Length: 91
Ligand SMILES: [Zn+2]
Image 1: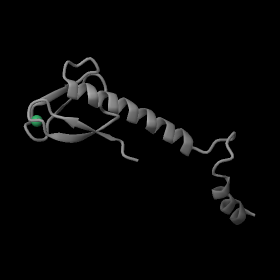
Image 2: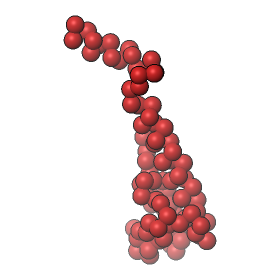
Image 3: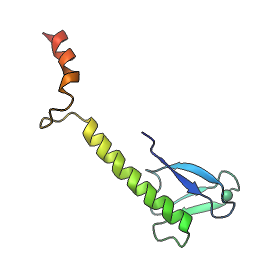
Image 4: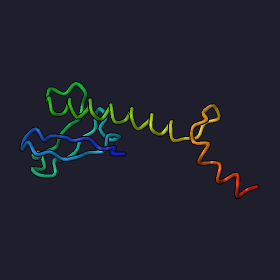
């Protein structure tokens, strides 16, 4: 799953991708093109930054949900078909 979001530079308007996990309040990074330092904050006056923060938040949520689903759970019967082969070799 893609865990990065697109960020648009305030100055040169070039787009680059950054990991959603890193895009939290207080995070800063340089634009790969013009090297201006972008500060990430959900209350940023910059619409590009705000949009990136919103997207990062959504991606982080999706990642959490995907991880929860991937992890085998006692309550869930999903994935039992995949475990059947393990049982076979063990028996
Ligand atoms: Zn730039």
